[in-house]
Length: 160
Image 1 (cartoon, helix red, strand yellow):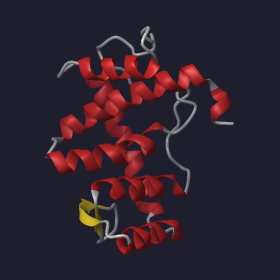
Image 2 (cartoon, helix red, strand yellow):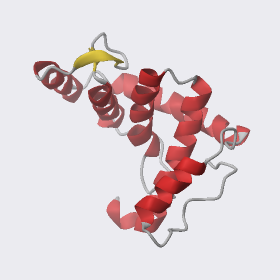
Image 3 (cartoon, one colour):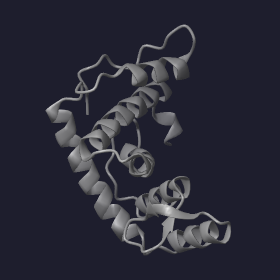
Image 4 (tube, helix red, strand yellow):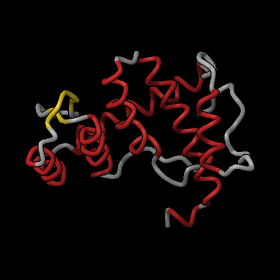
């Protein structure tokens, strides 16, 4: 995926985290290309399939049980489940469900699986803020660009 804005791979003097945060903060509304949104829609479709399949895994039930026991019920939905949790815990559970079967997409620049790490947080935060579908897709594109920048900086060793 790629947006119309400059790539965040050129770290500023203040450090990589600040450079990435500044880049994210300056991505203009409407800067994400139609092609990038189309790729993001495919990633969401892939994520939905692997996440729904992963909801049957024992890990998901254990995480939900732990969250409920610790008072983390809330308004954020879980994929394929009736329970609702706080936004942070919904992101954790949905992320774990999407990782459970490890059939998700890969990205050579990230050396990993960006959507399963990014989309659960975007969905929880977006739901809490009433974000539109276009906003969520744009956030996924920008989040993937950041993951790619970090992945390129780290190289494949972190995945091995």
